[in-house]
Image 1 (tube, rainbow, N blue to C red):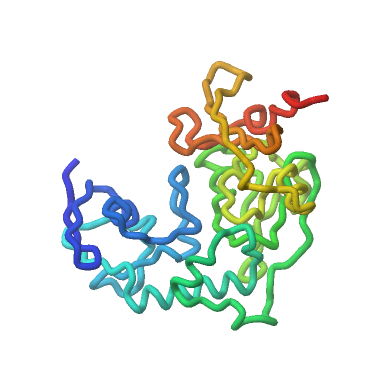
Image 2 (cartoon, helix red, strand yellow):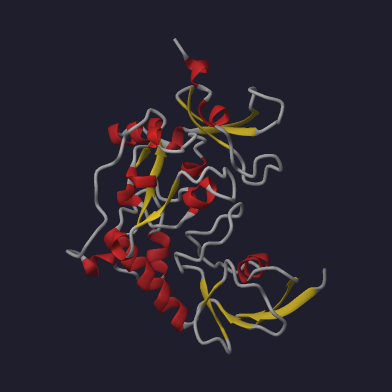
Length: 274
């Protein structure tokens, strides 16, 4: 595969053909922020935080999906880019609960003030608890589509959830808005594993956050291998006070690419049964 030379913020950058602008920028240490992007999912181009300016292009382009082309001249922090990122952050921050998403650094970086839109419409609603394994708290949902992709062709191929409604009424939903146990959901948990905001969250974590006992500073992560079959999926067990709280899987694991089945994701409760 041949390499392609482009210019990023005045710096010559060479990356393999087929690379995205985001990959080329990160390769050279340029800090292009993302929200809806994840390495193990197909870019959805929804949040528009990663947009950059390409000379000759009418509109700003999403760095997460736009492939590099020979001679591209890219600006990652132009005034137009900064204004767009500021606007996106303010719109999200004024309508969605972003309390579990560490955005203070980005807000300060772009001078975003979500409070300017206080009193406007929000997506606030009660959390949906219809099963014992995870909670849907859509007041925190930014419609990044990650959960839909993980449930669909990028991982599980179950298609239990999708985007329903249009405009401000758009939301993540099961078919006909039935409860998760009545839907096609197989409770693999791949949706909450990719959720960046806590809109989908394990019940254990949700309950501990509600009671104020969730303490990330005292947590450790232990990597092990799932014991339920011979596939060899790696598990990252999040532990606090000598108790397992949730199971994740590393994105770079060549077996799972971060995804698990219901046994790997939730089959650890017996370890601490009393």
